[in-house]
Structure formats: structure tokens, C-alpha cells
Image (cartoon, rainbow, N blue to C red; front, side):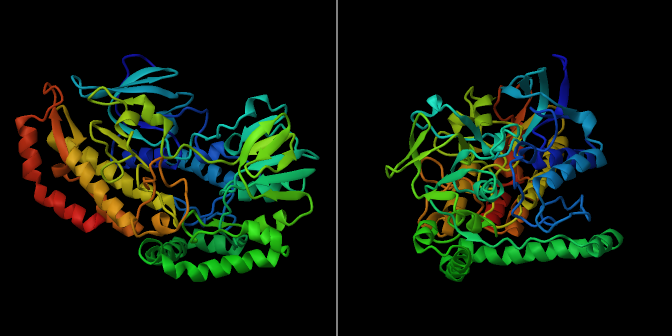
Length: 520
């Protein structure tokens, strides 16, 4: 790309969030935008995660855009291949490819307070943009723990999100590290091939049966001919999950019945009482993400599988040493240890109005106004930002809500006219964050007795939204200028008198009322 290239909007990433943003921009009549993608194809996490058994734990008809229904989903829970194909279809359906710059990893984004624009340095050149929409997602950068001796391991090592398909696991001694959503899909898929499979489990997950089946030809025909039937299916799936939220957010004790179902699911497949004891969690179900699998427990009961109920603490040559002192030999180590969620690497590459990075601004924990705007970073928004994650439903619902907010943000800039930028007021960000954290105190994610990837280094839950998707949609239906400082060209980063009038005119009243209704 040319040094002088300038666009109105630069979208970072081409997963669900980035493609959704691109579609929404087109539908708003905005064509002056680019999508910067570090890889050579679209898909985000559904491109990167291609490990054996990879599939979604949200029903297909709910895990898709409302504006791009897919009547051809082959299964009730679709696999990685079909989800990635869906995203390729969306890209072509809405004519997004001319806007996408592949192999363009963002190295640095710096706010230019004089020009009121972002300077974006990529691996393929530099450009500027009036507005940046960061849609890199929290599940994009794999996390491998620092384990003494790992660098001297003589065999193959890779993360589940960087699967080495050229490496044959047949007959190998495989060490699987981690028991999260990826691991419970990988274990059943590779167990028949492995000579010996050792699972290093730091904390056992709660696992419910995954009621998956093929969607029949007549069903798909009906959804094609009568789209309202697919809409009804989606609505039912959404409604059930909305009703479940109360148990997670206000009445965790009601989840005891779900625990009993999960234990019965385990007992049916695992007859060995010693193994069952290892696999039984000691925290409230829902504190960590509830996992879905009907194959995980049967795989663990197979004779070539060992479960080490202790985390991997050291590696001595080809010997894996657990925290409890037990040892196992391995030819291959597969890490299913998650991602940088509360310390997103992209934050180190964003330099705001005060000359500090977003990572420095978030050193005491991520926080953003309505999950989108960070104070000190004008005209910068994030999709799937702080406290927008879900514990029981589809993230696509949250993404579409944030796209509503993005669209109104751009409309507000148009209404302001001229060269202008919006910067979230620190007081508004803190007030929003305080309300979210107050609600979080009684949720199962904070009271369930576990340590999860939802929590940051200080123990704050900066990941999950403590309410329904309906509440979040209501909270993000429009931008309240009372929560922002309006910056005018030539104001050196301060609000102009006009901006100040707009700030007070738009109203502390509407700002406070909106927050009370949305996040109380």
C-alpha cells in the first residue's frame, strides 16, 4: 500500500468481528475503508484453529450473522471447516474482498493529534485512517506457559491453534497440556492414533453431553424455502439462553441441578472411581466455561490414556514432570493452554493521545466504555472488547450489538461535521466499569470458587458481560455524546468550546440515565 493512502475507517482483523464491521460499513453507505488482515485469508480464530475435532459449542443457527442466515448448516453444532466456509461466503456475498489487505499485520498504530487521524504501520506499508475499528479478538494469540526445560525437549511441540498437520501422531507418546474447550475436542480425535496419551490436567472442567446431529435434507429445504423457519429456530435457541442468564448472574445456587446432570454424564462413561475422582471439579459449574462433549469422557477411559491430575511443572529431556512429582514420557507436546485474553498483544501496538500504549493504559485491568472505547484513544473502537464475553450464548449477538454502536459512532461524527474526533471521558469509562464490576460480584464467574481465564492477573473479571444479550444491545443502541469529549482540528487534543457545549448539551442527564438503565 502507498505511504499516502488514507481511508475513513481501518478495520483490523477479518474474523467474525472484522467481517461484520465491513458488512455494516457497506450497509451504512461507507465504502472508504480497508480491512487489515495479518494472514493470507479470512476467518480469524476459525482459520487458525484447525486441530482435529475442532467445532463450535454454540448451535450453528445462533452462531451466524442475523443478516446472513445460512440454511445449509450440515449439523446442529458445526465444525471448523463449515464455519470457515461460511465466513468465506459472507466475504463474497457482500463484496468485501476489494477492501481486504491480506498479509498486512499491524505493527503500530499512533494517534496524530494535529491531523486527528491514526497512522497505521503494517508489514506491507503505512496508511492513515480517521477511525480505527480493532477486531483482532481475544482468541487470536496463543499462550504457552513458561515451563522449565521446554526449550530442550527433543520432540515436537505446538499449540492447538497452530496445529502441525504434517506431524504424524500414530504410535507416538503424546502429552496433552490443558483441559479447556480445545483439549476436550482434541483428546477424543487423537486418542485412537496415539500410542500413549497423557493428559496433564491442572483443573478438571465441567462437561455436559453435546447433543449434536446432522441437520436433515428436509430441514435444510424448509429453511431455504421458508426463511422464517430458520429465524424461528434461531429465536428459540436465543431465548433459551437468555432465560439461563439469571442462574449465572444472580442465582448461582440454582446450578446445582446442572452439576448433577454433568456428574451422571461422567458416571455413564467413566466406571473407574479413581478416575472419576480426578475428573470431578470442586467448584460451582459455570465458574469456568461449561464444556460440551459426548466423546471426551469415553476417550479418557480408554487403556492408552493416562490422566495426571496436576499441571505440568518441568520437562527433563523427554520426561514430563507434573507438579505432584509424577512423570511421563512423551514424543510430542500439544499445548491447549488458551490465549492472551486479558493481556491482548494488540494493546502494545496502539499509542494514544498521551503518547502511552493501550497496554500501559490498561496496566491495572482492561476497561472500555460500553466495551468499545478507551479513554485517551480518540476514534478508536474495539469489537469484543472488555467485559463483552459470554458464558452461555453466541458471541455473534454481542458483535452485532457493537456494530450498532460503531455505526452510530460514525453517524455522530458526520453530524458534528468538519474534522472531529470523539474521546471517551475517563469518568464515563470508570462509571461504566464500576457498574459492570458491581454486577459481577454476585455472578458464578466471581463466586464459583475457581480461577479462570476470565480473570486478569489481579483477579478482576475483565472478560464477561454480567447480563443478557438484550441488555447489552439496549446499552449499545446509540452513542451518547455526553460520555465523550469532542475534539476539533487545531485544538491540540482538547475539547473546543463547541465540543464542550455539545458535551454538556448532549447531556450528563442522558449519559447517566443510559448507564443506569443498561448496566445497573
